Image (cartoon, rainbow, N blue to C red):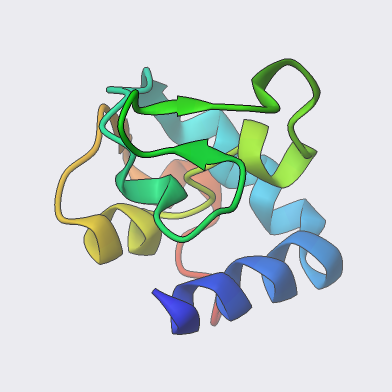
Length: 92
């Protein structure tokens, strides 16, 4: 998860154009499983809720940023459509 945390920050701050393309290819909705919030001090594990949900940071509002985020978690309510339409891999 730590590698994913760093990758997301690099994408968020340095590759916002890529993040926006990926967001257009993202479908689904949050499954409220809490996997993406693991380790966050604002996440109440016992209730699977966020203490700061209404004012959460934009990077949280836009999670998952790429299919890699879903891979890191194993499962998610979100998925990504055809990546050829969205600009593909962030390393391109």
